[in-house]
Length: 384
Ligand SMILES: Cc1ncc(COP(=O)(O)O)c(C=O)c1O
Image (cartoon, rainbow, N blue to C red; front, top):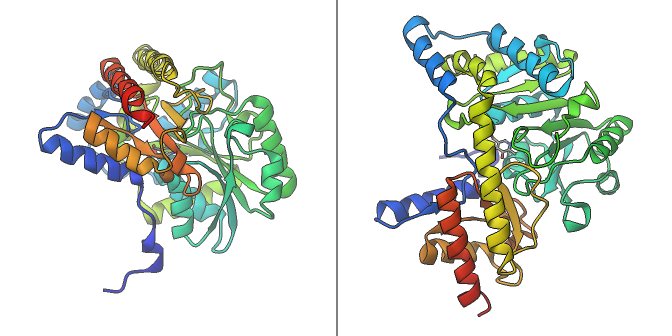
């Protein structure tokens, strides 16, 4: 059968590692999951209750393509309550996760042949989806010298750009842009006519004082957000975008044609998520404890070269002194230690063979066990 060139999209290797880990578990092996970036908790109680009520009381038909009005209003209120930023509910578009938001944003903003910058290392689906849409994903190599975040100088060196996709806190590094860094990038985008798409999916999971939203710096950026991470609702497949007024109708038309509407049950339930701070902050406290366990445990055996873990639940660790093939290292850790980790090549096809990403979203017991196993391995086998 004829398969379109755009279907030659690269795999999302995290999913491949998950498959290998699942195979090991099926064969009776134990697995500690440090490969996957998803909360180990269910949705907050109030969300589950709202979903149960909606199941029996609501018809659960299609909604407006841009989402239920009450949810859009609640999301807009979140911006004024949490950031002190005014967002009109009409500029909020509910999506099928941040992933649904990428598709809508990239189609609404970029034409075939446009050049859109993405950080390298960065979330692989940006470049894969852009390329599948015929948009050139222009890698911006970032590393320890710029705290793994792009700078105006690096963007300048990439030549003319129509767009920039930027995550803060980022995946795989966890690094968040300081306000000064964000302002520099927003200014660069404004003066060069580069559209900024800010992926703020990890907001709320933060270990440094309030990570700024790009909307506080410029109301004309496109922001992507999600209920998947802080709100602990990955499988509910729900997120949102905040877009400038002139983009609302184009995105709405695309959403009508592509998705009809986001999942109704999830939308009805998600309204309650904003009032579940106690539960959600307890999750963040657990991530913070896990993060400290890894810093202490891995630091003690010299695994202490990693990007600044300001937020999210990832360490992006330089393992160059252990291997020049992080994929092989991850296979060894899975086979010998039962620890699933993700090789850096998912996030950076060039330098990623020297890096491993560890996710610490699972239970503290699991993270403690994984830290011990990796530390033992590094001490006994790592040097050889
Ligand atoms: C940076 C980043 N953006 C977007 C996504 C996709 O999230 P969603 O579940 O909202 O589609 C992820 C998932 O891991 C991510 O890490």
